[in-house]
Length: 98
Image (cartoon, rainbow, N blue to C red):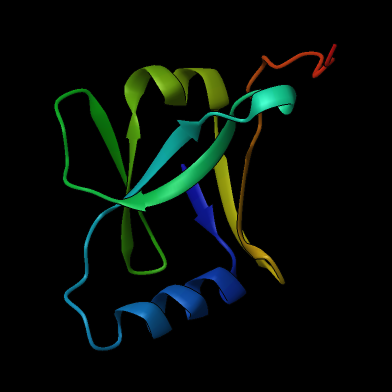
């Protein structure tokens, strides 16, 4: 399941106001030292996707990713969208330089 906060829903409604609605993909983006993080992008459905409707929008999540994350929450912060899940993605490590 993808859960959309009211503030995130309002931001998406504002964005799509003058555009044709598109599916929104939740994906694992590289995160350097802190490991991968969940992010959003406009995309088309692919084989192996799970599709979730939330707040009038369609969210796509690769089945393998969804099996790792569990339920996903999309919220809005002063810095943009925040995407988290029941089971945060593991990875990352030290950013030592030398």
